[in-house]
Image (cartoon, rainbow, N blue to C red; front, side, top):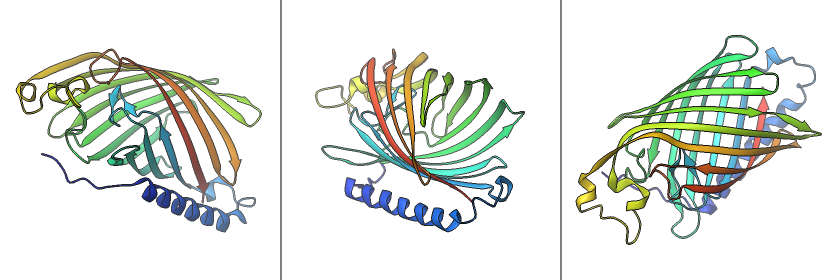
Length: 280
């Protein structure tokens, strides 16, 4: 069943972004007079908001932007106790641009010690249509994971259970390293994701688009089970502080997806971002 589409033009995205930045900048100014004299325990909250541009947007090797550039807005509030909540919205750019999907998440992170932490997150997803991808018809995700930091090396692992009208299982493991060159932070990383999901063949990228497949024909009644490596992601993130809580980022990535979840097996993706964060 197709959900009503909420059109979301680039003009609307720019207005929302500017509004978010104005609100956060104003809040930052109101608290700036106290930051030098108030310790961290008296500023237990953090609010962040940002925008990201993706030359292509994929998740777990699954294409979520119809093989086109995408733009996102996101905001999150967190407490030093480990509780966090946030929202995120995506839109594709170019011809027939508009709202694609959004999500709301609620999480809790518990530090076992200074180097090890575990985290659980519930996420609710909403898509403009449940035929957008193999995950679009599944609204709920429960993620259980943890991180372990050894010197500058961060190891991470998570189990992602999608549930609702159907189920899907994705397991992710990764390793990243932080290195500073002056104010510039470099973060090379590698991530592997394994999938286990039974999907409708008509939702696979190879069967979609003009001249591909037949969603009203035989493929709409056929399913296939995808099990194994979903994607390999190798990236290098660059973060640079701009002052007053703003951070600019850029991340070129190589994504290899041997399954039928992606439009192409090999993809080179560039992500550009701007984030603003304040403590209070």
